[in-house]
Length: 413
Image (cartoon, rainbow, N blue to C red; front, side):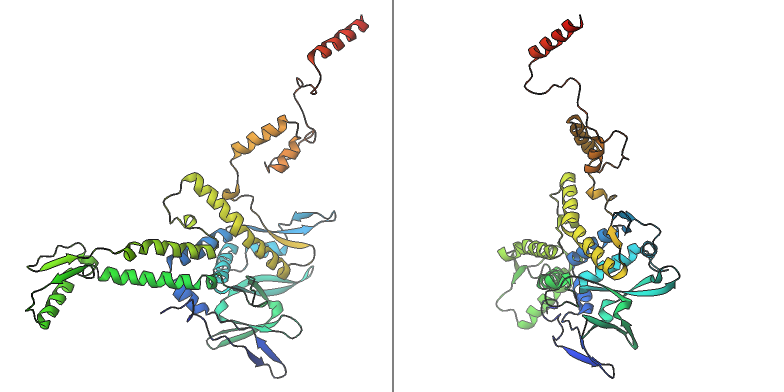
């Protein structure tokens, strides 16, 4: 019956391959990517919505290339060949589309494999010109003897291709049981997903049987089994299923409606609790998926901001590190740009109010501009703080100030 929690796993065993000379160990996983899609992603609305939500938000984040200048400062490099690669990873996909698929693969399988197409550059030597995503379900990781990964084998049907580890960019979620293969997010929610899928099937069957499962028909003691079967079939034919819902039953016999028992009344609440468990594994709340009515605009904005801070930004940071380490050389890095994400922007009016208060306290404009990220260019004199001329140091009385002024006037006269 269940798939993700138990039967979803493949037999856990290690095996080896030979290339004629050397013997290599295959990084084995007990997780079936095919079943993850067919029994999890395609069967549970909460799983589907959670994976899609994460993929959309992550793919919408721009990634930029920065280089280290002669002063030891990082600066954006829009003309760098890696930025060109990120802008258009291959002729068929945008980086948004590629990153969307990468996020899906990572959540379902724990790994995402990008094949590099490299070309020779007269100035920079060999560079990555294009990136293509390989289906994780078709990739085997071959562990090395002197390094973690020796090579990758891609096999789909009769097609089998070996790639050196330098030809593949592997993004993976940290896995406490393996340094070479990632941990799928869906694996942590496997049992909860099983329950969600099976309860949905139960509801579907229950709807088909509706009206018959909830009533008791009392017949005369003299009724034969054949007659009872006939009555049962007539009820099924005329009153069973969604099309016959709430259809009145006309009979000379006695019918009793059982109604719902306590277990059935608690069914919806149990299902919702199961959804919360699934969402927790994905770092998302039901409210983020629009599956609650108790949310106003202010709460929604706060929860969206929290989703970015607690889930999306840490994931993007993992992408930054893994992409930089495998695509960039010394003095080059890839960074996520959050500057234009509306969910992370404070209301401009609130920022300006804070800026005004800080300025009146003597904080220099350029400092305020940088601290609050107002986006203005630094101005001349902006490094100096200003206070109203009417202010005097604390502890000086107006009387003493007036006497000092009179004494100064007397000397002048």
